[in-house]
Length: 100
Image (cartoon, rainbow, N blue to C red; front, side, top):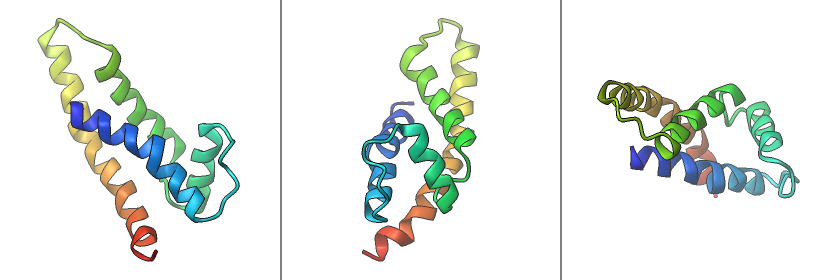
């Protein structure tokens, strides 16, 4: 759980803004939602909605502490199923970084 939240946080806080910076897109002072929409339009993010769902999964770990073991297991399974989406974003960005 911790690794999922850290990866999603790092991608949102550092990687995605760095992609826009590398592409010389003038989005430094824009809200995150604008950045996400631009990355989607450029093809580096499959969809803004997907990113929001990944963020929601991250928030469940960071802010919800259910006592119900079944609910905790469901959250964990949701994160496991979301990992390929994070990897897909990283795979899409990798050629941009490799070309530096």
